[in-house]
Length: 290
Image 1: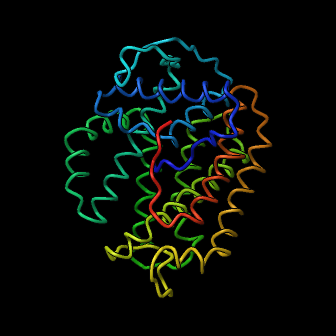
Image 2 (image 1 turned 180 degrees about the vertical axis):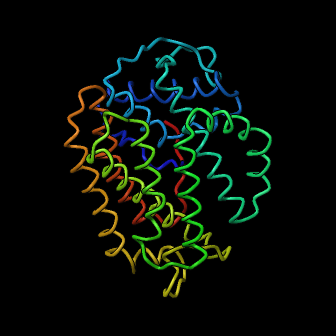
Image 3 (image 1 turned 30 degrees about the vertical axis):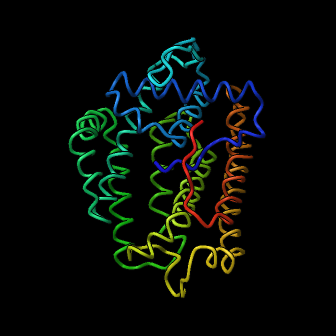
């Protein structure tokens, strides 16, 4: 995924931050265990959020143990132990990662992405595809529709963001099964839409330079990102805050008990903080590590 759905650390209670880190590091180790050590670099904040939500919706108690990490072999830290739920999320991550690579390759003929997908990711994707056939079809269909809209140079924010939003909604429907309801679906749809739009804002400068599709470049005399954010601030804020409000309204209906502090911080504070950052940051967002 993209790496924008992360906590707002300054407004996070220490216990929730420790729990989130344990989930993040645990997912990283699970990816290394079931895939390879190189694949651990695909660990990201969006998929960590999905892992926390998955465990929360099914009311799963995780086991946290002190373990060392390949990046810190001399100091133990809390790690969420691997379980069947995390392994499902690892498969989701591999599917999303594969199609993101394919999309990037088609966009800019990226040799590095082609090599990573073909030599490292694809074999793990093939296994994930067998395990989660319906989710694979949802993601494949969504990216196909997205590419069609981009080829048509569609100018509608709602239409262009709809395929990725539906990918997230479809994944949620398959993951949560009997626990799924409209609140989960609408929340994940709005989150997917928010992620797509934030990514378009983040990439606009390089998309302009590389002459790639970006829905905000149509009918707009682009100068630079700073000018774009100043001139389009109110419109962008309206779109993103609508997504944010929909996310919150539906999350509040879920009444989750486990990991509520982590999820509340990410959705109430993290999304808002990232929205404010994206509306003012003229350089490309740096993916910080937790």
